[in-house]
Length: 185
Image (cartoon, rainbow, N blue to C red; front, side, top):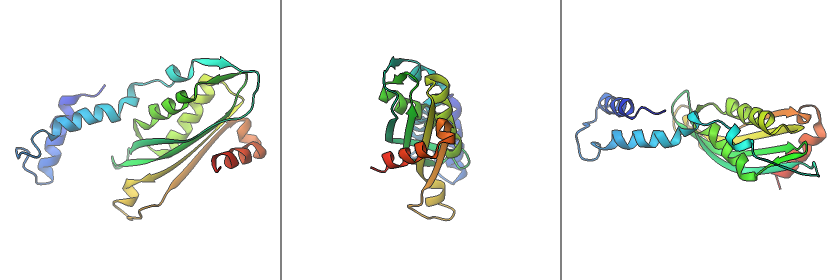
């Protein structure tokens, strides 16, 4: 749960720390705006992916299901700067599927936390395995990190890709190849 009073106080101190006048017109309401924004962008901290992945449907076919290009926005826990991009998820059902929007909602649960991309990728894969119980899952995340493009080495356009494979995707190169072909179409 976000403590709005603490955030407002911290933002005032931050603004003073960089030499700003926190009483000037353009900044006087900023601490409250930031506190409300943080409540929205970090709402995943209080969410459990089980609420999205526990409602499943029976299927007769167990073909690969791919949801690709799920846009996400997250915040780097090292620099408190945004990183954003696309998530691609594939799973091989074991008699049960989940509504496609539930995969996107699961991404949001983990993206809306202070995060690192590598951890988020694994968390999404582990949640799908735990709650949907497929034969396997593969998750790929492609993201641009503002901590790398706006500051530091300042290399705009550079992307980081991470992958997590569980179950049958871990040991079957052919399944992984099918996943890559499907997300590149």
